[in-house]
Amino acid sequence: MSASHEFPSDLLAGQEELHQIRAELSALLKRLPWSVEPLDGFTDDTGWRKIERPASPGWTADEQAEVEKLRRREHELAVFITGHRYWTEIAAGDRVEARSLLKHAHEEQ
Image (tube, rainbow, N blue to C red; front, side):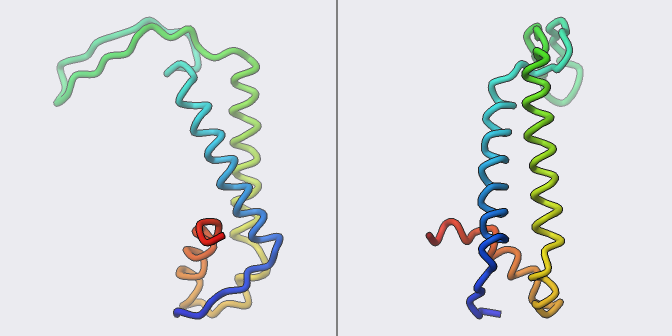
């Protein structure tokens, strides 16, 4: 299938917001401590690779709420996109490629 798709504007907007939410969530998780709860640091060199973690102060209630809010919105958008009525208009054998094209539609703009 090399046909161009004219995705509905709400589907494109949902996919774009999903990209943004995932980028925000990823950035937030990278800057938060490694453990949600306060934990002591540790070193483990008994496995096939050494693992070291510094002590973690844990996440604040606000940080936990922000992560939860972003994850909830990510889930809502994923459900909206995968359940969109547009997919019923696409032949079953072409849906995987069409979905891939939608995921990368923002790169073409």
